[in-house]
View: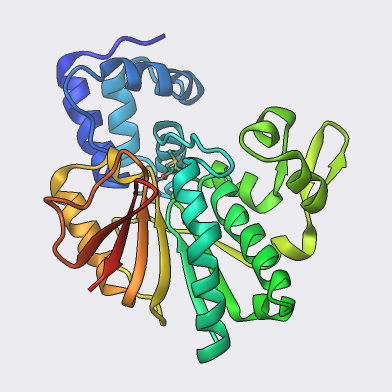
Length: 278
Ligand SMILES: C[S@@+](CC[C@H](N)C(=O)[O-])C[C@H]1O[C@@H](n2cnc3c(N)ncnc32)[C@H](O)[C@@H]1O
């Protein structure tokens, strides 16, 4: 593994923050060393200084930048992560979305750091079950689910919707797996028709939000934890700007809007925080 010097750490930290917003605190040198050393070897660089210079001056296509971002992002996810939050999604949010779709013709959801797809696909499975329970399965056609992430490799897995036995077993009940997945070799593949209902796109949350329509529900989970306080404020302001009045934004259990936004009312459902756009 390559060692990073203090001046090199300052340079790399700045580069990473610029390109994906990830804010590295003091003493996180090991993160850069462990996640980027292989890339250094691949690019033939002999130090982080040379690697930084290469990334800054010789990366015309942005390919190296994408590999750095891929290596530095943490794509940790699982099915229905945080039971209370997903109880809220299953017991409340999906019914509100279906009612909204029935009344207005359309409901819109954004999974804003979708990683390898478990989050948007989990929501879709709950929506499908709820629509069938209502006796209105076709209501699903009126729900737009956009799922974005900055990481190319995470998105490739999400779009492929094929999960190995470790990934499939993390939080997914057996009955749900049997209903929506088919076994293919050692992997489990999500139902093709269901899969086609989620639109995946690469999107950097640092970019301007220019979406044609506003959202009823935003899942912005376990991503703001990596950002600086300044960027959290900007991010939540941008999120508020693309939500419908009374739309809901759900964060990860360790994340909070307090101190960072006044655009939301905070309430609770089984200890999970519900952020409602004022
Ligand atoms: C820990 S995962 C969370 C996945 C999922 N939301 C969940 O709660 O299980 C964080 C995701 O945020 C993505 N991410 C990090 N910085 C980002 C940025 N600036 N724009 C968009 N996505 C970003 C990472 O690529 C990663 O897939």
